[in-house]
Length: 502
Image (cartoon, rainbow, N blue to C red; front, side, top):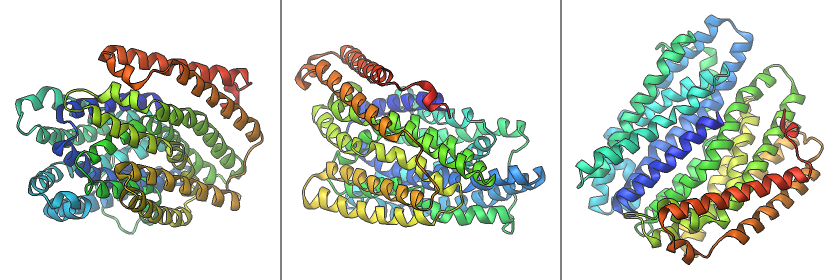
């Protein structure tokens, strides 16, 4: 799963490089990234977030304890209700597009050109929510049956669709290339749904429409989804708040935040989301089997793995923020000022990278047990904290888009501390032996990584003198040496592969 997610994230990076080079950090890209946040946030809350965390535990329980007929009936009933709700939501969004723009992008609504462009893009791209939610249902079924490859590689087709639209189609529509990109999103959704059909048919689990509101399993899924929409999508809600506020900031702010967030998605998606997705059905099965000891050990394994990967990733993004942004994005319409502004918000988001990653494996600890109340309360408090900090840092203290990014990071750490507190308080998670030694190894290895990067790194002015290929090679070598130093230091300190063979 990590492999296909890695390929998808790399293609996503290529997609963003192409889009920023084509559009620059101007009105068109600002409008696209802000408006795409609307279906994307709904997608990550309803589809990949809350739906997965509600549906997988119930389906796992049915798989373990019910007949094949009852399992298929649950899938069909859930499919019927989900598609009906999604269809209604999509129609409402298409008809009320101006209202959506006014609520989610108030800064755009005040300018005629941005408002009209935002409404058009929303009406083209919002149906993607319908398509990708069906993909999420398919992925949840496959993950429960321990088939992880296809759900992980499906996002490739979204990135490929946008790359093709930007590179080969948009040049023929030079006045309005942004519309080509928007239609690329719509087509990507159709392709992603289509490739799910045959694998589900082969598994004999292809859903059929059945609007059965009395199905007890489906009712439990829907009840779990309601709090899961808040708890599972808290980071996305926080990012949506940041996007709304960013629309009120100077032109370019939404684009700078978008590029920063996309770079964050590399370690977050490749490792944290992959680990969290794989761990959720495992935790759900252990809970159904009433195996509390292995449940706790699985959480412990997940936390250590996230810390082992997330800590150096955050450190690297902070230290190398400007060279990374310069190497990947500074070309075409994306200039030196855009690099500086983006690297500042990337640093602020990277401060919270570890927290964002930990949330992905801590939240399943509650949802696998079908106990969503605590994450909901924590998520609501985190949302309030994020909104307050965003206003304080972004507007009152004048840090603008950097303040919004830092607010997200700080509220994410609050969420992590609160989740760990309740998991330990209720004895859901009991720490295994060896954490002190693990932390010592981790800290020493990170110091070695930092000094390696600082020793080999160049001044920003020298980076700018390099050509594009030379920048990329230098950055690749620098990161490669950093990873090598980090891993060798851990090995010297006694950390072995067997320590993570759970």
